[in-house]
Amino acid sequence: FFADPKRYQMETPTTTDLLHDLEDEITYLPAPKAMRLVNFIIDMIVVTIINSVIGGIIQTIVFAAFISNIGTGSDFDFSYPLAISITVWAIQVGLFLSYYVICEKMMNGRTVGKLVSGTMAVREDGGSLTWKNAILRSLCRLIPFEFLLAIFMEPWHDTFTNTVVVKKPL
Image (cartoon, rainbow, N blue to C red; front, top):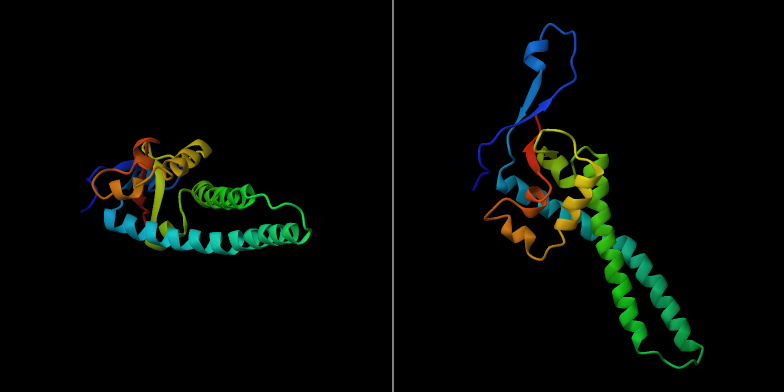
């Protein structure tokens, strides 16, 4: 149930400290799958709250425009509800992607779930995520059932982007 025992190393800035030789590298261990599941659940709760608040405001505005259009007596366009549904879906997907991209890049590989569990996403070479890494990781999360495959294998948002989620050193 736990991730393989690979170790990922990150070089730290050089210092003139007496312990310089001991601090050259920080060794990270991959986060266990159970910990990653906790990350996923917490992040989905956060994304649901964001989508409910922001999406709800946008839906209210769009619905009010729809109702006002009906009140004008103009011909009813049956494609309008479909357009509203597609627009709302696009906004929700955009918020989902934005949450992961912004958090993982701006918070050094962490989302709210990763902050709670003490994990972080890094490149396989141990470096911080780039914008490209964060965007591609987020886009991979849109692959249907990608999160379920993570139970049995390395998640695609890690393998396709050469990144890994690791335990953050204390």
